[in-house]
Length: 126
Image 1 (cartoon, one colour):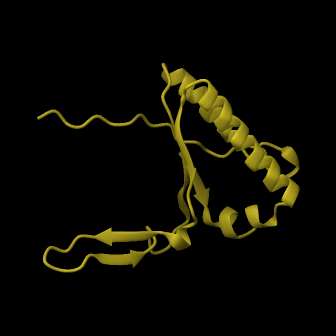
Image 2 (image 1 turned 135 degrees about the vertical axis):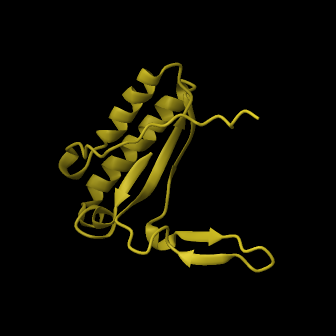
Image 3 (image 1 turned 180 degrees about the horizontal axis):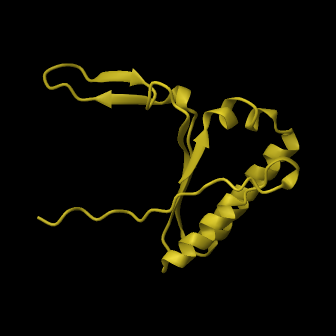
């Protein structure tokens, strides 16, 4: 999972990148997706829209659901996207995550963004 930062998403980060830098980043991600697809490891990858589009929904029995803006009142960090891979070892997941962390940013320098690795959970045994 890639977590974004509001400042990077809307402020001094991505919106200030050159067109070439954005293209380099997108090409890198597409190439990685193609490589992981070819190796049979990619299950799914998605970038998510920004926090301005997020909604939190609460069930209210007997009433319409309550829908509020965003995941938090004052969001600073948010889930920006994810890769779902099926790999034989945790080490392989770490290798892929390190490549994602090194996504090229302005001037091709690695952005070194944090990437969270989590296995899909198993349901509780009943």
